[in-house]
Length: 167
Image 1 (spheres, helix red, strand yellow):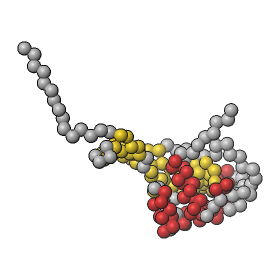
Image 2 (cartoon, rainbow, N blue to C red):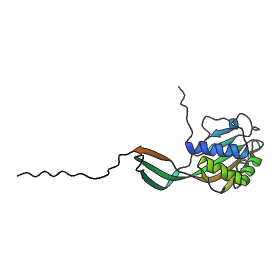
Image 3 (cartoon, rainbow, N blue to C red):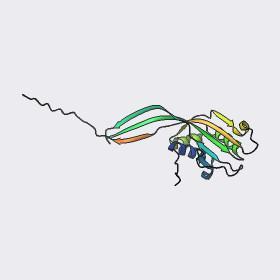
Image 4 (cartoon, helix red, strand yellow):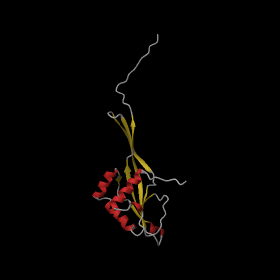
């Protein structure tokens, strides 16, 4: 039996961001190189790699007295690497670098509840490895996301004490 790995919610959000920003086919966007094999050197795949550790920036909780719900949340920061492959690898990497600061990108991030930071590094892996075949460019940037959970919690309006006095 083969286990199916499901990408994290933040990886899915990044993939949706890339898909909509670059107007790209979902069929060509992969996750973390799991069970993915490059069939040819020309197809322009984009791999969303969120394998880096996520760091907790802050934690919090808020209580909604009306609904009697406690909300626990954390703000997490994580490094993401987009791996661009194929004939359009350089063009796609440049498009992402340049368009990620556009108004369309801001609107997309707002709708996805995702914060992305400027691209901090671009690596031409093909040149780095001295390969003659198959374009491959890595683009690295950070994201911030805030997972939260609601837990039913009863409100205590007033405390009641009962004192027992024994003679």
